[in-house]
Image (cartoon, rainbow, N blue to C red):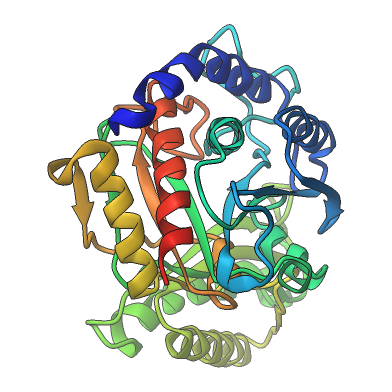
Length: 396
């Protein structure tokens, strides 16, 4: 860890651990991050932040911290650091004493850790104020499918707080604690939802000739959709399409009227995403016609997440910060993109920036009931944010 702030950050670890576990005990879903946002805003004020704004994008919080020479007058002297706050609708199975106290919800993706890391950097930097310019600390709700980043943008985030760069991070299970990783260019996939309803004619299971079975048609749709990636998309173009839920009928001897299916598709290209949409509709309509049933491909109920694309200059700044904190040998520069999605992509579509990964050690994978953020990663994340903040502001 970088010598000038090694001791001061190390001294924060017990307090950071307490904060992180408190957030873990009180998970909140999507935009309902009321308690988390209140705690974040209160702490920023306690740290002596120059401005604290609440209720942006419903429950987002933005704090402004000016450097030693005062407020930056325009975007050229400002950068934004972002953390997500929301949890997931998963029943926790960690068995820890700091487990979720809200049945059916848990921090299964480490946003409790992300919020804590940025708060730790906020406290450290507020004490030091050893930088020139203005840091914009952004705490965002609804990353998990709710497009909270876009909601904050639509609520005037970048008009009210113009910046020259935006930066985010995510913990990464399987990457050792004390190591970092970053992808050059596309870092995470775009994500969109599939909702398909097949409507047939119900009947007795013993007399299928008097019905139009939507289950058989749905089964053929599921299998045919797999040919989009294997036979339509360029083999060198990353793409994933998965049907993840099928609901139909309640009895063993009744052919149902309707089958409902849900799924997701991910790409690293907007053009590929559009091709998948076109092919899904073509296949569904063709199979439905062949079986004498009707099909509806519903539009996604949420805004699709675009591809998360890192910008070259800002990625270089992030890599330099990571190398300063842990040494070049512990920074994996240029990893392959991840096919998971991240709504930080909305911010990167508006302002240049970089999104990196922080080692979480040998933990369960994210979105797993046994996952827990590794508190040993806390000082590394705080040190990275602190070093990055200074470097990003100094960069011309």
